[in-house]
Image 1 (cartoon, rainbow, N blue to C red):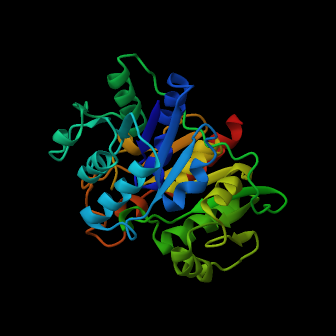
Image 2: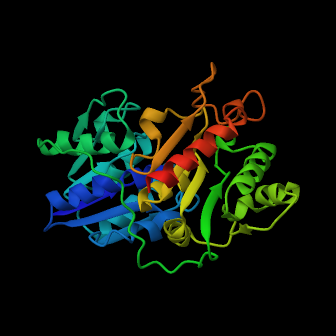
Amino acid sequence: MNILVRLPAKLGDTLMAFPFLDLLSGLYPDDDIDVIVQKPYLGLCRTKTYINSFYPFSKQEYKGVRGLHRFGKMIRKAKKYDIYFALRMSFSDALLGYFSGSSTRVGFKKEMRGFLLTHSYQLPPGLHFVERFVHLLSLFTGRKVNAIPVKLPVDKVKSPALPAGKNMVFNVNSAVQSRRLPIDKSVSMIREILDKYDFNIILIGSHGEVDYVNAIIKKLDDLRGIYNLTGKTTLLELAGVMKQADIVISVDSGSAHMANAVGTRLIVLWGGCGIAGETRPYNDKNTITLIKDMPCAPCWPAETCKFGDPQCLVNTENQKVMQAIDELMRES
C-alpha cells in the first residue's frame, strides 16, 4: 500500500507532525510512506529514514489552484496512492489530495472541504498539535494511538563546532513580529546573562534576520563570549548546533521546536500571539515555557502587536529567565 502525507507549511508545525509519522510507520511497517514537504524543511524530514519518497513543495512555483493541479498531476503520474493524510486544516491541502488521485483522503472537517475528503472527522477543541495529528490517526485506524515525544535525530549531522566551554544558543527571531524579542529587551537579557554566567552566547537566525541580529550586537558593550551564526547554517546544521549546546533560549518559533526535538535544555519566551496549550514545544523534559499573562493575549491571528513592541515579551522579567536557567542547569 502507498501512503502520502501532506505535512504542514510551517517549521514548528512540521516538527510537531513527526510523532504522527513515527507512529504511522509503526502501524504500516511494510507499506511505502511518502511526504509532501515545504522545500526548506526537506533536510529535516530526511532524518526520518523510513520515508520512501519526498515531494518538495513551493507556493511560489505552484501558485493558486492551477499550481496545485499541476503539482497533484505530477504526483499522480509518479505513483498511485491508496491513502492521503491532510494534516493541516486548509482547503488547499484537501484539494491537493483530490488532485493527487489518492483513493482514500483523510483529514479534519474545516473550511467547507469535507466533500474533498473520503474520511473527514470533527476536531475536538483544545488539543495540542502533536495530539491533534495523532488523534486523526486514531480516528482513521479505529485504534487507540497515544502521542509520543517529538524526535529529530541529528547525531550524524555535520554542523559548525561550538567554542570551548558552556554554550547557550539564543534566538530572538520569529517570522511573526508579535513573537520577536525586541532589540532593547534582547540586549538587556544578554547583558544580564553574561554578567551572571560563563556561557558563550550563540546568536542564530535566517539570512533575512541578519540585520536584526546585527542591530542587537551593535548595542552590546562587550562582545566577548558573543558568537553570531545568523544566516550561516542550514536548518539541519542549526539543529546540530542546538544539539551541541548546553541550553537554548528562544522565542516561540520553529527554532524553539527544533531545540525541543533534539532534546537540549530549552527556555521558551512565549509571545501572546499563540495558544500555548496547542502550539508550545511539546516535550516537557528539559523545557520551561515562560508565559507573561497579558489582558490582550492571545492575540492570534494578529501577527503584529498593537502596542508596537510585544508587551508580553517586553514585560517578561529577566529574573524569571535567570531562575529558569538555574533550574534547568541544576536538574541536569
